[in-house]
Each structure stands twice: as C-alpha cells, then as structure tokens.
Image 1 (cartoon, rainbow, N blue to C red):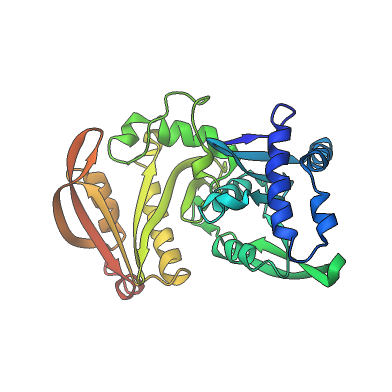
Image 2 (tube, one colour):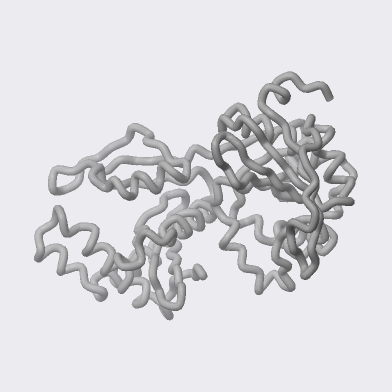
Length: 319
C-alpha cells in the first residue's frame, strides 16, 4: 500500500528516509556526516518539502519500508530500508511516482550509484546529458523517462496516470460486462479502488480518445521471452461497437514489432468470445491452438483459444 505523507505519518517516513540515506552514503561521506542524518533531521527535511508543495508517498507492507517525493515532474528521495532492498519495492515506488507526474518524469542520481541506474534504465529512463557537480567530487546525472506515445486516427495509447483513476474504474474495474471476459479484479467503489498497482507500468497502456484524452480502455503485453509476448486488451462496454479495439491493437502491434523488437505476438480469448476473435483476425492474427479449461476465473474453468502473428506477416499483412 502506498499512502500520502502528512503530519500523521511524517515521522515514519523520516525514519525510513534516514536509515536508507545513511546506508547509501556510507561509502563516500564521513562517518560524522552520515550519522548526523537522524530521523529528526530527515523529518525536518521532509516537512520543508511538504511546505514547498512537494508530494511525498510512503510504501507500507506490514510496516513502512519505502518513501519517494514528487515535485511537478521531478522524482526525488526514493529510498527503501536497507534490509528490504532487492524485493521490488523500489520499482513499485518508482512506478507510482511516474504515474503521479503530470508530464515527463525526470530524476537525478549520483554517478556512482550503479544500482539506481540499473533500476531507472530498466523502467525506461535515459540520460539527458545534463550534469552538475556535488560535494565529494561526484557528479549528479539527470535522467528522463522515454515515454512511448502511440497515436491512431482517433486514439492515443500512453502510460496510465494518476488522473485516470475514475475512468479506469468506470471502464474496466467496475464494468461487469468487461470483466466477464477481461481478467481484472472487480472494484466495488471508487473510494476502495486500489489504483496504485496500475500506475507507471511500462507494460500497461491507456487507450484514450484523442478528442477528449479520456481513458476508455487498456492494452498490455506480458510473458515476454525470447522475442515473443502475449497481449491483452479491454474496452469499456459503453465504447464498444466503434472499432476502437481493433484500431488500438493494430497500433500496439506496430509498437511491439518495430520498437520493442518482438518476433511473435500471441493473444488468447475465452472460447465463445467472438468479438475478441474478430479483433484478432482483423489485425492479421491467425488461429494457433485451443486449450481446454486452461484458466480458472470467477470460480469457473475456461477454455482458451490462442491466436498469433509473426513480425514478417505483420509487415506484409494479407488481411
């Protein structure tokens, strides 16, 4: 669970920040300077950030274990308790922070922080070329997120943002017609809808109407291995029958083949879902195999039918 930091949990966030900061700076700062970064000192620092209108977030998994701050599009103060590192918590916080940024996210790292560099590059950040010097003879390097943005005649496909929560709820997680065939956890109310798991992911994209910018559906890829992946997609039931899904899938296949370098893309549907089958066929995908009772969903086993397309067939479509 990721929650905003305010006066009620500021000290908990500061304790995480202090412990992680000390551990990450021991190798190149004096012992006295490191130990001076107490919980009390970091609480004052975080309070100054809140006063300056930065947004702080605390990751809690039975106990507070991570913190991050966002100021407009600048992501800072990403720290996870030393004993909790290497478990994916930093990735979870970073993805959340990406989703909170209104524009292109940027961040700075010390040039000797190889671990942070690997994390940021894996999630799509790249050096901008901007640097500045800091004490101890080190440079800080600026990174910017290389955000895919795909357009069609009527649609935009891009990353999920914090402001998409209501549209995601209405068109996916609370739309029972969609959830009959699209696998997703049902959300009863907007207030109880945990949206944090969808924010900032690099494998999940909003399908938006270009005219309004509103999210009407989602599309994603998964099980990436050896140049192959599977895709899934869902469109709000009130937006069906307009050809939006086919338009989005075609553009997404172009992205996967031309930008992600995929060689084969597969998709599956609950057998009997003819609408999804027609989308796959219109996009040039062909029947691959039938898998009886492969997947249990909503307490019932479902047959799956798989379709697939190779890069060379997509480059020279016959449909």
